[in-house]
Length: 306
Ligand code: SAM
Image 1 (tube, rainbow, N blue to C red):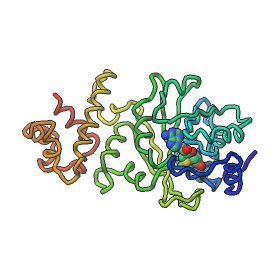
Image 2: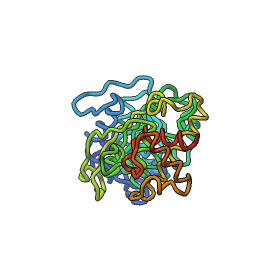
Image 3: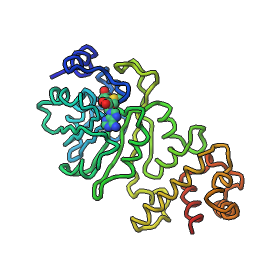
Image 4: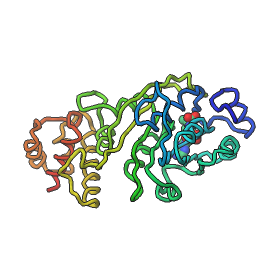
């Protein structure tokens, strides 16, 4: 078995397969063995696993995006029933087959996660899914939004435990009273609750990135947007359309942060209509998007589209 977080072993493995870390794919490999275990264990127990050995999450499938040289994949294999890992870099596939030989519950798929059909990807697995990844920074938000929006019919995605850039983590976990609150915060909050678990310094990676990272766990709402806004339609298709509308309103509201909501929405809705909706919700006529909670974005959207 390889010591996949030993920098010398990682370098030798990459050399053996004539590879070098690819900047374009955001390849910064973890070289402190505690970190991938702590991320995988946090996914398994559903909170920061710093002080505890995680019990096996029986019956649960782990979905990993970007296994790299497999350092987190082997931890996931130990803690989950099944592991499906999607790696974009074709060059890493023979290396992964080598290091993961004997890990019978792991399957590696060579694909761009952003282009993959999630039902197809998960069709040979069963039970709930938890996503776990050290995400390449250049695709953090699209990857997270894809998982939140494209959960396959009949499959429950329970959580995402992901390492991302610290600044993005701060944005995801902000509330409307924080300066980091933005479109991505409000959009993610429609699907789940984000919590920052711990930070990881650049020295834990090979090569070291320029930024500090943080691990965030997003636990998906049991009843989707109904947990944020109970007045949303009970009909699934109508509810999906509603969520898409709320996101559009959120996007417009944050397109130019310094604009009032009335001005930000002026291309899409009559000023009088927005003012009346704000009045109904009990918000000031000059409120900006950055002060509007996810719940109030839902209420406003509901009124604006009536
Ligand atoms: N999990 C490994 C670790 O923690 O050491 C590697 C993490 S590295 C930050 C990101 C990984 O994601 C790389 O292996 C990279 O090739 C892969 N990757 C980048 N873009 C991807 C995409 N669109 N779909 C799937 N994998 C991707």
